Image (cartoon, rainbow, N blue to C red; front, side, top):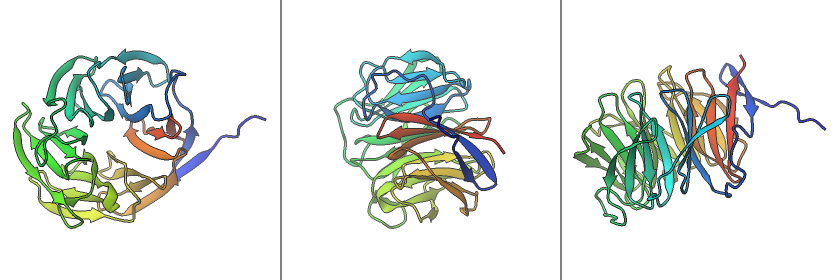
Length: 280
C-alpha cells in the first residue's frame, strides 16, 4: 500500500514531511549521521561521526561530493557561516576544524588528544562564527563553558561553570547567533536555552524543553530548537513559543534552515535525514 503524505505545522506555516531525504549511502551505521548544515552555496552538508566526515548534497537530494577528514575522531556538529566557512566540531578529538565550502581545511583550533579542563577544549560540542568573524564554542561534554575567539583564532574570553544558575551549564550542547547578535546556548541537561550577549552577559533563558539538542536562528529573528522528546519548537525573537511539531526519529540531533524555508533535521536512531518543505 502506498504511503500517504505527512504534514506538520509550525505556527501559521504547514510543511510536507520528506523522510528519508537525500541519496544517502546504504552502509551508514545506526549513529552515522550527527548534524546537517546549509552552506552559503545552497548545498546541504551532512556530518558523519567518522571519515568520510562530510557528505554534500544538492537541494534535489543528489550526492555531489564527499570530504575526507582522516584525522577526525568523532564528528559532532557542523555549522556553515555566511562567509563560506564551515566549522566541524570533533568532540572526542578536542578540536574545531575550519573548512572552506569546497572542502579545504583552513585551520584547526585545539590539539588532538590534549583535553584541558576549564580551557579549550574538553570534548567541545559546537562552534559558530559571528558576522565579524569571531568564533564562539560550546565546550561541551568535559567542560561547562563558552569560549570566545578572535577571527584569527586567539582566545579572548571563557565564561561559565557547572551548575544550573545563570551562566552555569550542564552540557552546553549547541550554540548559535540570532539576528540581533545574541548567543543562544542549548544547555541540554538543564533543559533550557540560555541567551547571552557577545560579551558574556546573561540576558535570559527559554525553558519548557526536554534536553535541547540543536538551535537554529530564523530570518525573522526567532529560532528553532530540537529536543529529545523528540520535537521541533519555533520561538519568536522575544522567546514566545509560536509552534511545535514532532520529529520522526528517536533524536533530532541536528537542524538547519535553508533560504527557501526548508528545514533539515539530522536524525539519530536510525540514521536518517528529514526535510520539512513549506507548502503554505
